Image (cartoon, rainbow, N blue to C red):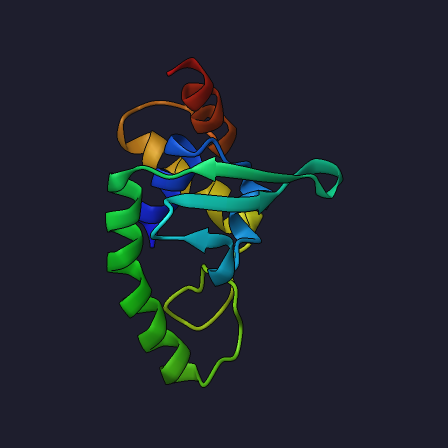
Length: 118
């Protein structure tokens, strides 16, 4: 799940709120795009690259196991190993911890800026 989070934040330029609100039907694997809803409920269609698609394909079976284990009915994409939906703070905490590993102070929005620069 963590790899997919970083991949979508960086390679698609998603905002954290867009990321945590993604649903399964917001991603079209065959057409390689993500549909997200940003500020003001504006819809954006964003391409997702081959790496992102591959990471997504790896995550979906893991997600399905969690869904079955906790008997969940959610269509949200991101569920943690305890059957709880991830939120903005979870993503911020994860990204911040990853930044500390490389001695950098980064946030999810840092990845969005990196996407724009790239």
